[in-house]
Length: 252
Image 1 (cartoon, rainbow, N blue to C red):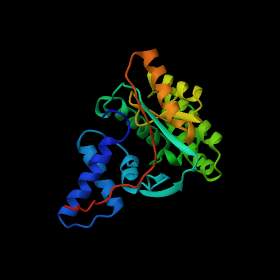
Image 2 (cartoon, helix red, strand yellow):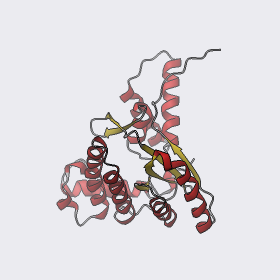
Image 3 (tube, rainbow, N blue to C red):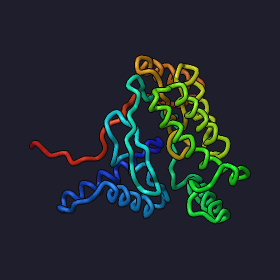
Image 4 (cartoon, rainbow, N blue to C red):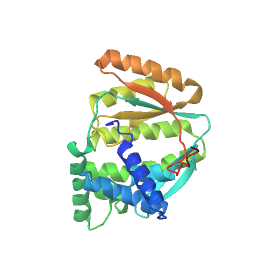
């Protein structure tokens, strides 16, 4: 909880899927994600659709390229030598209590000023003076560049893009913390290709990519250095992409 790892989206998707199955109602993946998103909105969090889509359409050993306008998910194969390292900063956060909704409102204001419905239709030149909007537009470009780097197994480029993303999240979007910044530095110093905060920021976790053979040792070492520097208790682990929500038939 409060880790920036989409736990509420995962619970929402699982609950909606279980209820639809129990009631004998067929539900598409897209509808399942949108239903779980609406539940978050009712709970006071005006979130996007990304987390729910990842929970629904997750695929073993693949990343998911999400198109939030079309509400589609395209699997992208992860390089086999890659490991994903997650470190919880020990600094929890709650989206409903953070500045998340303020950032969303700022982006909506930028769209209104430009006469567009979504910032994906803006150019960098149009938002150069607006740091919040500039982050969103530049992040969209980084996502596409990241997918291209994955396709050619360029871990160095992927890492650089993750670091650029964190710099933009911290500087332009203003959602990082000293603890998250420290974890990103420690992970890169320990040999990660790149790292960035994950989730909405203001606490929670960072995610890094590293060579599979080095990931476990890296996670342990970084956790120790972070705890010594901050006196906070981190949680570090190595994870992998797996399949999304599905009905599990009981064998009892």
